[in-house]
Length: 313
Image (cartoon, rainbow, N blue to C red; front, side, top):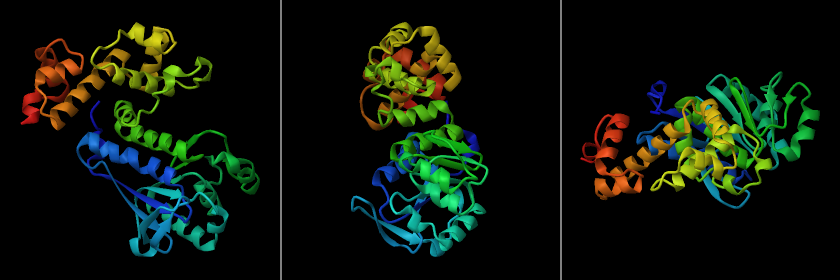
């Protein structure tokens, strides 16, 4: 439940922007990493924005973003996010293909977001690999690049390449990258900051497709009931699943029981309140569902290695 030690230094991300990019896609790509840094209270991720020629790149909604030119930045790092949205075929010329082939040697993972898979495929970087793209372009993508194993999944991870099908799926992809690096519990903390999965309770049960979505929604419900924690059986009833099934999904997705995740979420909220407010320890304990300050302090010390007063000081 702690941030993984295998990320002692920050992961480096380069966001490759193109004119008419989607602001929604950009926000969904970057904001989860910003939230991860905030939760960890240290820079787990750093990023920069580049474009082919540098200068101001304007989104489809008119938002300008300052970028460095690819040649000036000479970026390298852990992830390259390739992020066109419209007119992607116009960007897939010989120069772009050379740039992306060179980038393959300088980045650990290449990520095609929205229509980014098209540019990667044009550069020959997806041959023999599974990939997806914005679903409006799926058929044409498959016809144009027969050597790519095109699938309709929202997010596709294939070794050192990742692709996703649009702006909303970008958020799911970034959460998966955070989960791989820092664990499922930490990714749940990040997703909870954006109320991700919060509408699950109100959905038709027939529309719930994955164990991951159930776990996210259960975690969102846990966050809404911190002051008066629900019994796990009651939690399952609220989500229209049986308790045994809920517990099995948590073991599969998080490697923890729902009760342990509930406790972790309550203690992380306590840590946030200790760090950011001047509320008394007793009041924080009450807000986080503990009968008294002593009970919370014991759990807090066990989880974080020090009592809340020492943490605050």
